Amino acid sequence: MIDLRDLVCDDAARLHDWRREPEVNRWMSDTPPDSLDAQQRWVDAVIDDPDRRGWIITHNGRPAGFLMLSGLTDCNRRAEWGWYIGDPDARGRGVGRAAQALGLDKAFDGFGLEKVWAEVFADNEAALKAQASCGFRREGYLRSHALKDGVFRDVVLLAILAEEWRARRAQVRKALALSHLIAA
Image (cartoon, rainbow, N blue to C red):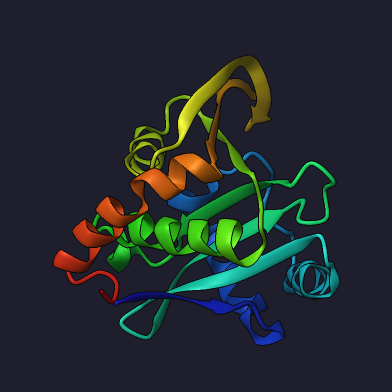
């Protein structure tokens, strides 16, 4: 089963290791923290910031990835999100799709957001497919938008509105429950 648990200070070392993994880092627009101390400061800042909320994605009780919402105090009731699967054994098993459904419930029902949006590298087919499966729609395409490893990369803007999630929620959650990824 997939679940989300609140980010805690003790997660810094795990996040530091995950962010330094080539398969995770290649899809992140920023560079990983250069030290465990820098990662710890980042985790502490996220925990203390009312504008951001982070969760560890768990797979059968084991940490598998990270999901974060930023912009929770925005007067327009929209937030950016990002997520990744850090545990190589959890990739390709629907963990990201399930975590997204749980995260969207938190975003729209828990925080009362109207919109959740994301920036995804245009060549990250797995993330684009996973987000589309939950109802994210393409809102834009930014050419040469992010400099990663000395190369400018294109970025796709994706978003989902609260009403769109509500229209898809039951269908998405039923499919995930039938796959034994989330509780019914």
